[in-house]
Amino acid sequence: MWRVYFRRVASAGPLVLDSLIVYVAYDSVFVLDRSDATLLSRAASSEIFVGEPASDGRALYLATERGSIYAWRLPDLEFLWQASGFGNFIAGPVVAGDDGYIVSRSGQLVRFDPKDGSAEIIARLNDAVVTLPTVVANGVLLGTLRGRLHFCRRNGEAVWDVELEGSIESPVVVHEGRIIVPMYSRRSGTLSSGSQGRLVELR
Image (cartoon, rainbow, N blue to C red; front, side, top):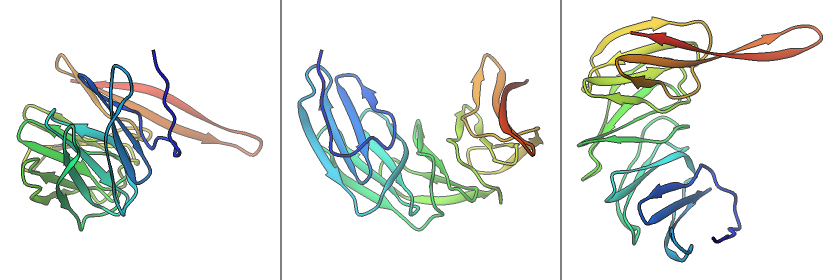
């Protein structure tokens, strides 16, 4: 149907929103018409974007490696707000209803208001996190590189945690009452090294 080129490679997969496509590259974000790739708007930041973008259909939310969250209105990318001062982010934000959540590499769980950008740290895992939080009706699931799965309420209050064998480097999936955790482990030897993946299911 169409093909379009950018000077910089994508820093995350494209985000498809009805008639729009959002393309994020390094310090820039572009909004294209999905039907013919017409460039509708673009914006840039002094910081480098990381992780997947998020949207509630009205605005776009992005995280940076310096610990900031940015918001722009769609589709014209009018700048709305910036929240800064958190630990370095690797994964992007998640928006669920009236709240947004993001986790820093050091395990800070940050809750932000998508409307005005007010944000605060509501929990500290004291462990490395490289993946998105998984938001469910009554709380948030967070996996760490050391293989510990945490569940807390939406206000950050800890409910339970469990230690699993391996590393959690991909988002946890919740489906029909089941919690499915992608686990990743590395094996090393004198002559070779490898990796092994598996799925762990919790109820």
